[in-house]
Length: 113
Image 1 (tube, rainbow, N blue to C red):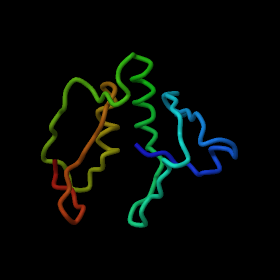
Image 2: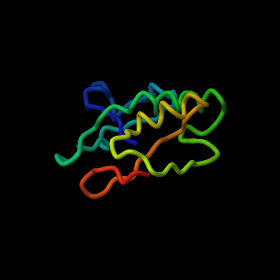
Image 3: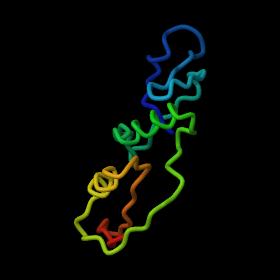
């Protein structure tokens, strides 16, 4: 897990300070010398809203934050243009959806499952 944090976020005094997660309210001590720079080939992006909702729901139900459900469902013969959001919306009509993954080839094109 990565958090977008700048040295200025730690204040001007001491070696660091206590930081709190805005989703699960877990807190930890963040030392200045433990901040890292993300390599140019990578980028830090906000978590999608469905991930934040899943974590909040899990915490409210006393489950681990990363809990994605008790079973996985394999769906085959998908149209190549079906998106993960499309699948999430279809299955959300029946209940809470933990995670959705569409397998892609090396070019990023859906493999249909």
